[in-house]
Image 1: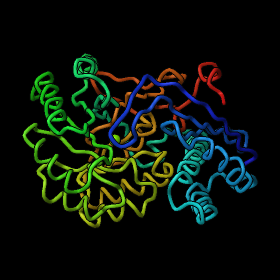
Image 2: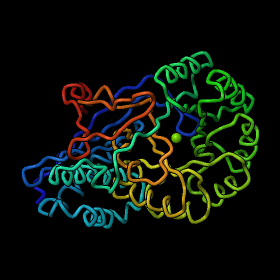
Image 3: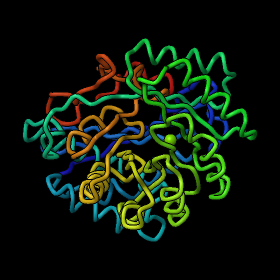
Image 4: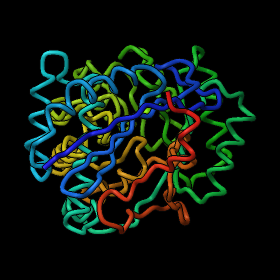
Length: 358
Ligand SMILES: [Mg+2]
């Protein structure tokens, strides 16, 4: 039985970063959840790029915690439905999904602790070695700094790197992508991410200009609401289209997959609405034969991608939570593995977080 859910809010400073869709980013918000049930404590979290985190905290404290206390923690999938329905009027996605995710992750952790199984095993996966790519949030960086960051990714042995595109001048994007390609050579995969900055017509034009760079994918070329637009881009451009971080409900993934609007399905167990919801996205990808990748949430994603039929890459994000974790994810020769301990294996280091409590 769930005895209590405690949530906490932190504001973690970031070095100046940004992209074409979200503008400047100078902080990450972290909302942690500790869920007590039957003598076990499961941990979950949600994050934001610096906005909306206090609303996520309020939803957990005022709506989800009172709803779940007294219920059986073992009913993870049923509790996800219960939370989703409770917030339906203000939810069906958006930041309600972030709040549900934080609690859902804690419930999966409890399930793993109770069964003595790591998360990937609960999800029906086996512990695979997954290629990781170095991912920068680097649109404001001058070219020398951008190349310096990419050099750092190469030193860590990543078989792929991703840079932002969407500078106002298309020629600048081309020059930056070209310079990165020359630096990394042809044996390292190169992805680009426009963070929803373009109209569909702009994305067609920009995409065509980038087609010669041998890109592994073009991520979030246009607004996530425009599924038909993504489908047009996916069929017209030779670049594979990757989406997922801005989809906040399983039904959104379903539309993308059914309408042929996505070539690579990217999951994020926080923005998608939890591990329960990301699993549904992976199942849709599997059924359609689509490859999968991840966005942020590196540690949880390593487990989730083990439950996917065609995981091509885990994103090793520039904003990794490493400084705040008891055991940061290890990258060996550009690859990661899921943790082997029961549950998610994710534990925040209270002392590291303490100065940022809000
Ligand atoms: Mg992205």
